[in-house]
Length: 496
Image (cartoon, rainbow, N blue to C red; front, side):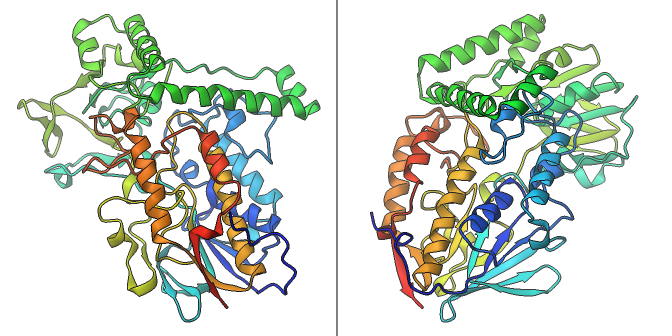
């Protein structure tokens, strides 16, 4: 392994970094750059505050399905989480606190949406353009926009004809009073299972238009007791032990995502038992029973989804939607379902990654064109032909069993070392070799075939052609091991 970071005593080269997004990934990256001695960085954030997807998803019941102790940076633990699984407002508050504590706010350019970045090979820098026409330059471009930032809207005939109120769950309209309304929810994924139980008691009628059922298991949630918080505050090492114990327990769950595994069957057994406890109607049970292996789609943690579906004012409709009229949703069986409000719980444009931003590398290569058959990157962070460009939460770094914060820290540490190498070795740019990236992705996709993510169901983990572009194919421990230090033999190095 070739290292360029240690043992360098030459004069360092001035270097500027542009970070896209002030969510969990962007903030972590900035902190790691500062630790590496890189102070000339700017975070470009399209909104007016930090928090990323947690700032945006303000729907009722919004919260995390990863235990609170693990959904925080390892270097900035929070000993006083209110619950074992934190609610959305508390998570946003955590990231706002981190941004203030680490003096990141002066480095954030809010209300600045980046639409295009082009690499100038001669100058060895990125020319960046914002939506308002402003232009910026940086030696290094790092994306922290993640996979879950652009809401996906269904393409249904007649949606524009609807005279009621329609909105996406990720852009919740809090001005709409749902009390006494007839509500249609399109989709039944991770967001729906959180907000449906919250709104079901208020509405007159709630119809959930389900495409495929989910595997749902109980969520071991509860408030932390005051003595527990006091113990974690007084003895930080206990909170650290609890964090790593939680990580190990979740890491074990990866075994459930191996096709045909015993642990996968345990998940299915627990899910069916939970359903049978709350759903007595055999026809509704049939509708809610998946016909694919647990984990092929995201396994959902919930304690109140099934009780909500069992309410007399809630209906699960499995016939596909044919069209929308001025006041109803019409399914393919010809039935018109009257609705006053439509809520799109249809997830995100997860496999498009950086789109609609235009990222142009060497030889005028457009990243969206390069990724036309499915996004891929070297170790999830770099793309051949796009020098000095890195990503956090990029292709094949999502998880089905552990905390994405863990993965983000691995990536931020790796990228910070690459940036330090650029500075310390006075390089104009580094560019991952095509053969290194292809070898990495060939091995990754081969490993992926052993997992349930590659099974027959459709999910946001994969493209329409069936390529899994979002998930990591193994344990997070393996990713950590591979990301401890960059191997610069995998990169082409261009001197300054």
